[in-house]
Image 1 (tube, rainbow, N blue to C red):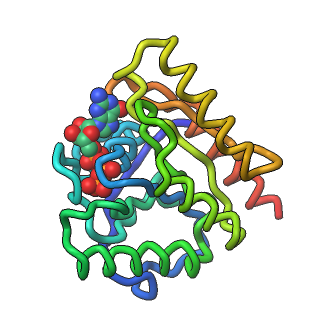
Image 2 (image 1 turned 45 degrees about the vertical axis):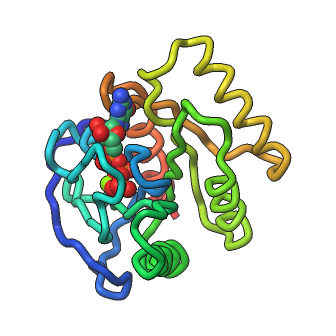
Image 3 (image 1 turned 180 degrees about the vertical axis):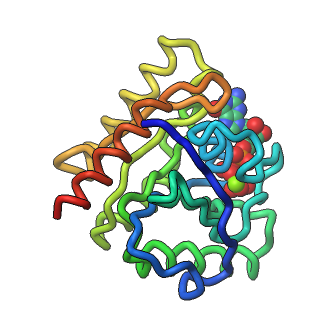
Amino acid sequence: MNITSAEFVISNSNVDMCPHTDMPEYAFIGRSNVGKSSLINMLTNRSKLAMTSATPGKTLLINHFLINKQWYLVDLPGYGYAQRGKSMMEKIRKLIEGYVLKREEMSCLFVLVDSRLEPQKIDLQFIEWLGENGVPFAIIFTKADKLGTGKLKTNINNYLEKLKEQWEELPPYFISSAEKKTGREEILNYIEKVNKMLKEQ
Ligand code: GTP
Ligand code: MG
C-alpha cells in the first residue's frame, strides 16, 4: 500500500474526546520505549510525524494520525514505566484501558514487544487481558536490527512457544525495525487487508 498522505489530527487525554468517524483505526501499544512512535514514523515514511525519544515516557496522550484520508494510526503512551510515579502510572493505565475497551473504531491493536528480550510478564499479562476482553490484536517484534538473525529467530520462537501456553491459535505477528524499515510492507499489507474486509462487511 502506498502512503500518499499522513497528517497529525489531534491529541487527547480521554478516549471520549477522540474524533468520531466511520473510519477504521489501528493503534500501537507496548512498554515505554519499545518503539511505538518510531514505528508510526517508519510506516508513514515521515521522520517527525510522531514524537520519539531515547528516554521512556515520551508519548503521554492518545494521538490520532489520518492516513490517506481513509484510516487512522493511533500512537498511545507506553505502559510499565515505573519512574513516572504512582499517580502518573495510574493515569496512563486508565487512559490505555479506556481507549482499548471503549474505542469502537479500533480495528486492530498492535502490541509491540522488544525482540531482544525474554517474554516479559507485563506484556504477557497485557496480552492475556486483551484475550479476556475480546480485543482484536496482532504482535510486532521491534528493534530487530539490534540482533543477529540467529538470535532473532530464537527469541521469536521462544515468544511464540510462550504464547502457545495461553492461546490455542497464535495471533498474527510481524518483525520490524524502524531503523532498517523491516516489516513495513507486511504491516501495511495487513492493514490494507483488514480495511478491505471491513468495507465488504
Ligand atoms: P514512549 O512514547 O515513551 O512509550 O516510547 P515509544 O514506544 O514510542 O518509543 P520511541 O519510538 O520513542 O523509541 C524509543 C527509542 O528506541 C528511541 O531512541 C528510538 O530511536 C529507538 N528505536 C525505536 N525503534 C527502533 C528500531 O527499530 N531499531 C533501533 N535500533 N532503535 C529503535
Ligand atoms: Mg511514543
